[in-house]
Image 1 (cartoon, rainbow, N blue to C red):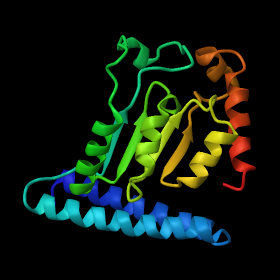
Image 2 (cartoon, rainbow, N blue to C red; image 1 turned 120 degrees about the vertical axis):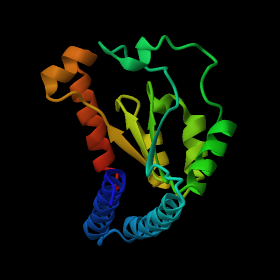
Image 3 (tube, rainbow, N blue to C red; image 1 turned 180 degrees about the horizontal axis):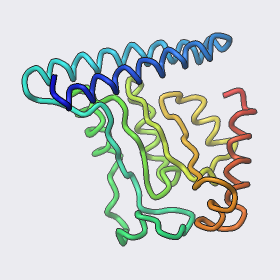
Image 4 (cartoon, rainbow, N blue to C red; image 1 turned 90 degrees about the horizontal axis):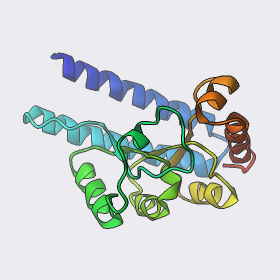
Length: 197
């Protein structure tokens, strides 16, 4: 077995472990538990597609990262998105994004990380992603734009999973992102946790 296949097998095993743990943790929440079971089945099917492609010499990645915007409501020190000198109008369209997610699913790539900038500034893309129910979209957000509406959106569209980003402890986060940002992200996480997500 070559190194690449060993890596992919290890990744799939860890992914399977994650989904089994997610089901176990949500046994008292039937809707969430059902979501994880369906997702586990979709991911197993995607793994089979990738395996068949690999056997034919056409490997596909299990995960893709898609930077859907360079715009952000923060101006963090050292931000790579700002360093790229974003140009207005150069962002992916919802139509192109929908084609991209379909093409990814065809080759077995059913986890697409949405990054930015700040992905919550692209509600059009999030709504497009929400329709691809067999794909999981971790949404890497600074958390400052999470509110009741966005939490309800994530709750309704469980295939979009908000991932709140901090730099470490309070001082490290506030030094890089701005004073009070750490508390803001922690507050956003608490809103999410107390919303019966």
